[in-house]
Length: 151
Image (cartoon, rainbow, N blue to C red; front, side):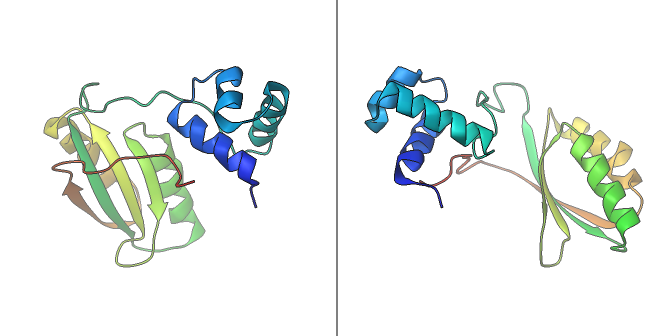
């Protein structure tokens, strides 16, 4: 379990990953040295996995987003490993979840436009061995998008 001071640090870093150690320490009510040690411990333990900029998808030219529901023909290691290997290499695939229900996997994909999405399907998804079906839900409007955990 994460200690209360660590959750305060994490909550603040999720809001402002560029905060200086001094700003962070002031915000969470700790000395700078204690704050620095806790942040380093969170990084070394893998709880903090890295720091990144949040980029506005559409403003960056990725006008289309889709959720793909993918089901495999067979679930033996060969097909699963091949699918996972190929999907994790594609930059268009932002997220991939192994799920319960009708589909085995759900992918969140972003591309520049419908033509790029069609190419992604024809030249990539439909060529992965062992796929039974791919169903697409094109995102019409993003209502909520967040990567912050609810501390």
